[in-house]
Image 1 (tube, one colour):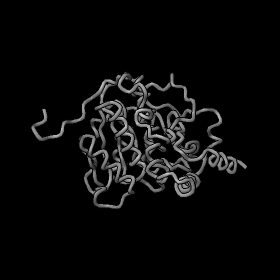
Image 2 (cartoon, one colour):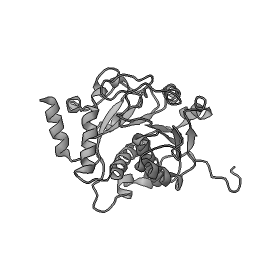
Image 3 (cartoon, helix red, strand yellow):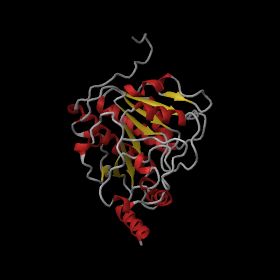
Image 4 (cartoon, one colour):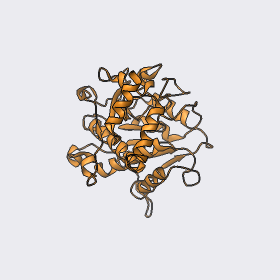
Length: 299
């Protein structure tokens, strides 16, 4: 039991769909703003959370022909912000809420009990993870845990969007477990991963192009060994988004929610062994722009 003045630890949950029957997107909708939505029609009957080894990648027929390189994804992001006028924070919010929607759907069918554990890295993928954690906590009321792997975000340069989402979580949720690069390999919290209901991988996104060091490599190795259901945010951490190469270690996800368009690396190299069931989320980038880039890539 926590002593007076100490924060209460996160409480394990039994998922009750009545507590979020409308889903996080509806509960947190902002007036006049397009909501994130999953573009594919994944066969939900096959997406239950069981903890089994993730299957080889599954996706809608033809989705591989819509894949784009990360440079094009980055440019579409930039144009959405600078030309379309969408605040970068709004894109992050939409991305996070689309992932949270998928997590809630998985939990609804899950026989597992335990915490939803969000692993957060130091970049914008980590910012997406903080949005996911906040959205889930608001929908469920409890049972969400955040672990941050990286240099202290209060002492190093991080994006304004990440910093704001960090502040929002610290004002709302239980304390964040922090593991710094200069620390020994991640400690006892790694041994508890197998007890989680589901882990959200928000360590690194499509921008990663170098081999992973510590503490990320140890965390990914432990996550893969835990045989816990994993939802990867945008790209399974450690997978090169263009080539499908494993950059030292890569998360083996049971589900991946990617943004804007599939990444080339999902269908190359080791990609199909790491993405699990693939979903594409619309986050506010004009669809006409995306279709134009897909047509250009296939020309």
